[in-house]
Length: 390
Ligand SMILES: Cc1cc2nc3c(=O)[nH]c(=O)nc-3n(C[C@H](O)[C@H](O)[C@H](O)COP(=O)(O)OP(=O)(O)OC[C@H]3O[C@@H](n4cnc5c(N)ncnc54)[C@H](O)[C@@H]3O)c2cc1C
Image (cartoon, rainbow, N blue to C red):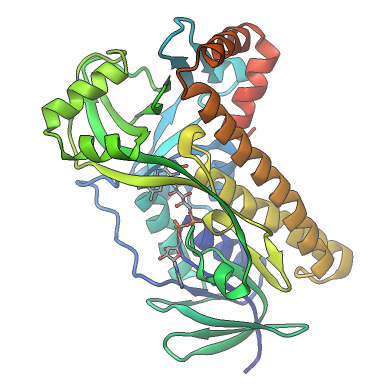
């Protein structure tokens, strides 16, 4: 059988984007996904939401899919406000200060997966294998041989592992992981708010962890509340009123009284960094390479940036050598993305450590940091540009 160009393992947001990107470059692609995706349902929003940065909106636009995202559901946010439990002066970023109408959109994981999935199904250059799982991966000098649970086997010039934080591809390659369990869970839910959220993404740092309110329609927010495991478990078990009472107190009533309008769920918070993003002719992308603390809403954004950077690497390689999958260019991609993702993961971890702490010295330090950050406009704009992906 003629070898494929690229096999992508994992059809989450990152794997679907990578498959689509490679196919649109004229490459022959196979995509393997373990589960049929849950179709997006308007009446029951997915609790897992993404604060999609502007550069990643551009990626989705480049596939011609942004109108389909907007037709389902996405809410723009024009500002971000960061404050803590001790100091009164918040740090506020406004899209207007960057000359933009907004800083990004809040959208459901299921919306993006659904839109990307439909596009992959329509794409003639993609052979879809779902439900199926990778069970073996062997490298030869010029190819990767992939075996699936169904018995199907392929050879490809490049394999992409985008199979999430518990990546099987990473394990099959024996790539080690630098892991840190934060002993926290992210509690997610939708709440209605008494006061208008002003299309602002709010983040309050508490000594137990950050609490985010992300605007999701009229007087409605998606919350991501990082809490120590036992506290998260306790709050998942309490009645809706007791939950909202605790939430209002943790958020200092900033948006008035809240009311729970969905189920609640929680996900464990860990940093997991693969020791490398490339081995032979296999790349790791997205959570398979780097799962980070969700405090800056950058988890998915980093993974989609891996995809945009890979498109650039394919383009440069083709211009220089005539081969989009030129090995030195892929190695350069891996080095650059590895250092950017590691710096980001450690920065989120350190921010969490400094801000989610009741130590007096750290409390003074963060008070100064918020005050200084808000007054020094170039610094503030640089932070806002990073978060918005500009
Ligand atoms: C409840 C929850 C809430 C979250 N909230 C936020 C948030 O607010 N902000 C944020 O930035 N991030 C958040 N995250 C993290 C974010 O969802 C991830 O960063 C993002 O989904 C990573 O995308 P991915 O495509 O790399 O991996 P995934 O979305 O994990 O996709 C991996 C895919 O690979 C498939 N797969 C796995 N194993 C195999 C195999 N052996 N063979 C074939 N296919 C396989 C899986 O079925 C899955 O479809 C949250 C995560 C969870 C679980």
